[in-house]
Amino acid sequence: MSIAAAFAADKEQPFHPPAAAGMAHHQANGSVTIGAEPYVSGDKVKAAFGKNEPYQFGMLPVLVVIQNDGADSIKLDKLKASYVSPSGLRVDATAAKDVRYAHAGQRPTMIPTPVGTIKKMRGNPLDNPAIEVHALAAPIVLAGKSASGFLYFQTGFQPGSTLYLTGMTEAGSGKELLYFEIPLQ
Image (cartoon, rainbow, N blue to C red; front, side, top):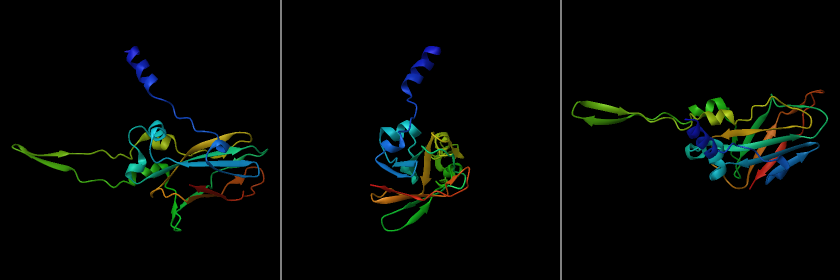
């Protein structure tokens, strides 16, 4: 049994986010650097979410990495995130705990048989524990540290879109940081 567990552990790759400054889409304001990357398809999506890819079911996951190189911690408890398409359509982030409810339930398939009908139920593909596990949920980013996770938007990805992040404050002074506007090409 332990051999089977070892093979399963070898097969599964843990998810490791990149550094904020090394991401293709990033912005630095003062001592804070934020990187963002939409996860639409490919091996990186499978590494984060497994075989149930949220984007196939109308949920765009965007990986956000916040690097704090300053001397003061940053509070994220009032963080607001918006995805703005090139046409100006604004979509606010969906809380990770609510993602499972975004994909409306479907009626069960009724299969007629000689002894009656059988209901064939389908599971909700967005009821995936990895969605909440990998969500951006850090309440604070300590000085010299980073925080990362996914934000979820109920929209499709369009090149030329922008991710807006506001509401971050310095923990010591309570001063709000400048907003971040990260273009997603």
